[in-house]
Image 1 (cartoon, rainbow, N blue to C red):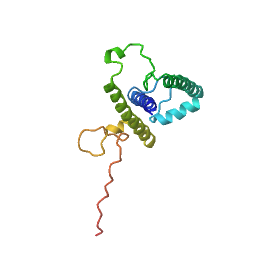
Image 2 (tube, rainbow, N blue to C red):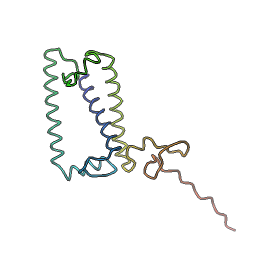
Image 3 (spheres, rainbow, N blue to C red):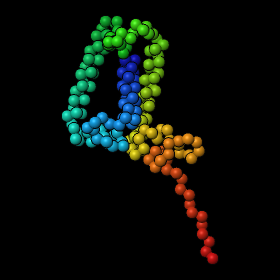
Image 4 (cartoon, one colour):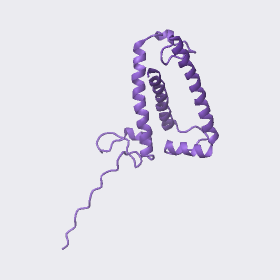
Length: 167
C-alpha cells in the first residue's frame, strides 16, 4: 500500500507541476494551442497518435522497471517502499538516507497533490474556457481578483430591470 501511495503521490506532484507549466508558459512548440488541456489531448490523439503510442510504451517500460524493483525488494526485504536506489546527485547523503520526517512530508505533499491534480483536471474539464486561473478569481466584486469574461468562476448575477408602470 505504501508503495502505491508513493508512486501515485509522485505522479500527482509531476502532474500538478505540468499543468501549471502549461498554463503559465504555454504548450511546447508543435503542439495544438487550445484553452482546454483536455481538448489538446484529444487533438494530439487524433493528429499525432504515434506520440501517444510512444508515451504509452515509455510508461510501460517505467512500470516494468518499478515492478521488478518492487518484486526484488519484497524478496530480499532490504528495500524501503518507494526507494529505487536512483540518486545520481547523491542527495541522500545531504538529508540522511532514513529520514522519517522527510518521508512523512513527501506523503503529505503527495496526498495534497493527488487532490490538487484531480481538482485541476476536473475544473478544466467542467469549464474549459476558464482554465486553471479560475482558482484565483473571485465571484464577488469586492477585493483584488483577476476578473475578465473568461476568468470568473461564476457569471455575475443578472439584475432584473425595474418594473415599468403603465400610465
